[in-house]
Image (cartoon, rainbow, N blue to C red; front, top):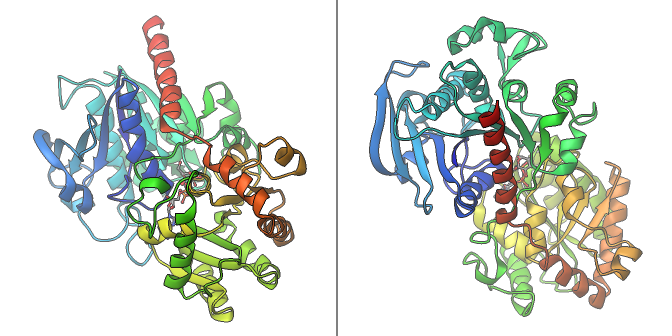
Length: 487
Ligand code: ADP
Ligand code: GLC
């Protein structure tokens, strides 16, 4: 089974969120499950610097505004996963993020940048750049790769099936119709039954319309996106395609997130020997200027700061929890107003609330290990990874009952506690009051060490593995291959 994945992020080289964690782990897990995986990536500076190049597959150009384009086959050191990097310096070699410049403005040539990524995928899959390698399946991630499904549909030599994975339906890759011609796609694709979306066109919609299978990253989110509340205007289309939509939960990469051998931590620990966790908490409190108080329940949040993540709910619920002796660590970056509000909370409550604005991988590990509970009060959450990391680290997740959060955390209700199933705290309404109620329950549980220890043990015994996710994706790929063979 030959599978070509394409994506705009990959941990640890280029990351804005969980998509990078997925593309950093899933290809390897698929390979271990028996697939032959190639990963197609834009030649961003960090990837170009890390690529161990084996050979040049092709060079051509000009294309998509790039003078010359070279396709380089190599690896990023992951066992058995080949990388094809698109070397197009004019489009990709610049400082800043994958989608935005350092000031947070989208790159003006994003359509060319991700159009090229998608176009190359379709032609690479057909064996045009490397006659020795043709894909059975092209697997595109999020809007940046959505156009690949349109190019595949339009490609006369198409032999591969397509899978489109929605990591976040809210980012739709919208562009003005005047830019459509630069893509070289059939004009009819600019119709409402294809890419057109409210007077513009959407690269995400290309994936939703043309992919043979649509997946998203949890079963609950797969159901939610068929409703107006979560569908971001795409719910009608999702309903139409319901027969090919499914949810496959993300996993955790144990090489990156395991408390027993996490080199970033002040002290490693395990379910059997939790002494290190107390050291991690003390180190986190000292590092961030929080009072060195082992008895204070410490709540942590590590997140992009966008309305999706419900950080405003945390800020509103904070005073009541502080009054009961809690501490908070807020780490993230994003919306300027949310950044400022988080910073203000720390100034208002010195020694009890610490805020770190910015992206910091080491601090994220310190927080997940050192906090007692991790907050994920999202308005919507396709999967969510920090609650999974929290479970592994015995840092109980406190989450809203949406998307992947609902699928991965069992609320400490009296019944679930009695049955030994509880792993965290779950609340329903996206209101400060509902979150405050969950914080209250968590603080009460924290004051009962026997109960808290039992919850921790249960949490740490959870296994959200990439092997399981890879098995499901592979089943999907096999179904597609069979369909193709019999059609
Ligand atoms: P999303 O993809 O919507 O941002 P996820 O929970 O799936 O949410 O993934 C977020 C990932 O990004 C996690 O690996 C988390 O640890 C990481 N992360 C988020 N913000 C930061 C930050 N400021 N510093 C370091 N890591 C961060
Ligand atoms: C998205 C979602 C998040 C998910 C991640 C990886 O960014 O917001 O819920 O975990 O993708 O699939």
